[in-house]
Image 1 (cartoon, protein in one colour):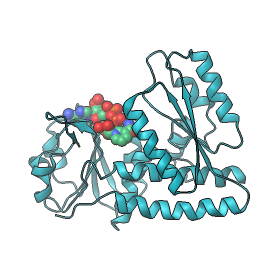
Image 2 (tube, rainbow, N blue to C red):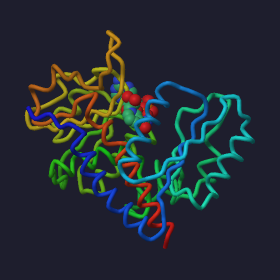
Image 3 (cartoon, rainbow, N blue to C red):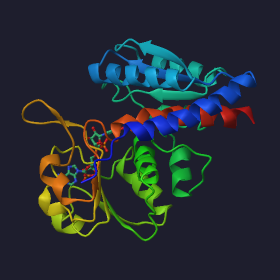
Length: 282
Ligand code: NAP
């Protein structure tokens, strides 16, 4: 059944973002993303490299703010404030999780919502609730919508079931689907008979962080399955929340892991930085 890869979606978003970045540059504004990293976590460094590459492709400058993992909470907040106040920075990405000694909580209220390109602030969460397009949604959640849009899917009245209700993926994604007139169901760890619950969906999105949770009994032949999960299987191989081998022959469309939703996230990030630069100019 059609396998929907993320790369062409990412390329389409990036091409449009590059044009907008060039328009800004012609007006003397160089869009800039600051990436804040505390420590040297391997997966954060890998994500950072991907983001830097993508920003470069989209004509966006990147500034890496690498902080020592032993930084105090007070110094961390001060460094964050400096970046937030810097007029040459249009977007801020804070890599997570933070070391256990640090709290993200005060930053949620400090960050300029326009620069909050991965939606940690309450203002951006509110704007998703209110369907106010001047806000930013978390990049991964918006990336799922980009994939469905790219497929040309009209979500009006469609049964969309989201497995996962985190603040960064599941919850905002459900709201974005709702704003497209889908009928949305959230499933989570307390959902009874999960397979039975998802089986009649038109679109099933798995964002649970549980390797191969979605099996053959979760799906139907007309279903589009979007896999957001990033896990490691019993053989140490990267895998999603969907048992791809079992599910792929049984559904209408499916995204793979790797090479699916993950590939789209940094393009959405770039799009948000350019949007932020446009909004900050006004
Ligand atoms: P999370 O904060 O751990 O949330 C997981 C959600 O899935 C929770 O709502 C949990 O339910 C639910 N869940 C977990 N196991 C389940 C099960 N067996 N059955 C039904 N529901 C279950 O994870 P996350 O940050 O949203 O990320 C989800 C996945 O997406 C992960 O694999 C992650 O690597 C991947 N991902 C995350 C990001 C990101 O920016 N965070 C980006 C890209 C990909 P409860 O609420 O009841 O506990």
